[in-house]
Length: 357
Figure 1 (cartoon, rainbow, N blue to C red):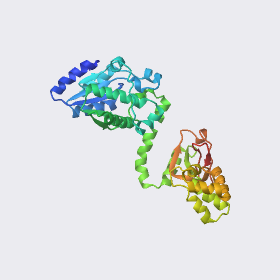
Figure 2: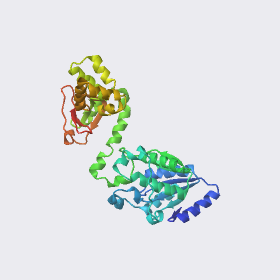
Figure 3: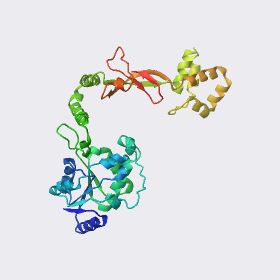
Figure 4: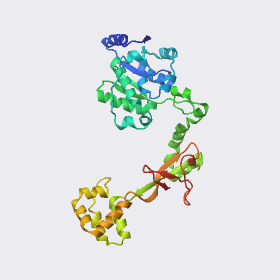
């Protein structure tokens, strides 16, 4: 096994391998290797003639400098683990080697990189795309291997490969877990004892649900979750129906005791368009605007409707949505128990309005 620090040297070795028609497999890592990484390497070795593993803590994917500084770096130990499983080349460059100049590329992967981890770690997936694309250009692998534990990262890398037209096959590999169900990760060593005890809970619950849920109704599942975690930590979610443009005209017209046919004719002047408002309808429909300006009764109706438009019309319970808190729910939001339900909450929507569930 060769340990290589320079791009030029690695490309020279791999050029010779390719001249001999060898298929190249590649496993990019940030080091601090564990059995999960080694399972990727073992598959890489099995499916390719040459296996390359990179060990590089990439600074551009860290939006927290402290996180970058404290990330474990154990190159000697990593190499000791890699040689017995058949790795041929360990590429362990410096930051200066990979970034002789700042990488100013900005990638746009749409919602793939904007949600979940992307929403909480701005710039993270852009940094991932920067380094993985650089490594692909250096190694020029036929196959690359990534763990399904980082499934969003895999989606980002697939999008990047397509966007940059890089000729490499992305292979996703199964998650390896501890005996208690926690996915193997280099970051697990940074958990406090209390965090480590709680960490497997999600995986354990999901595993239990695969056996429990198929045979149960929605209410039976909710009751099970309440029993398991406590009714003070489990709440259902309210949904609000709001007064939309057409609906508010019909409701207000009914309260004003106006003839149904008259009110219906006004409501039908509202264009059937997503997120339409009365103000927008007055701009879009000349007939509605003219009627509003010339008919005092219509003006009174519409002015009243404009004051009520968008307010909650009714509330109902989400069919299956449940919130589970690590502490009592009233530590986070106020909640209210209804007479017909054992576990309910007050849900605050984006407009700042609240409603009882």
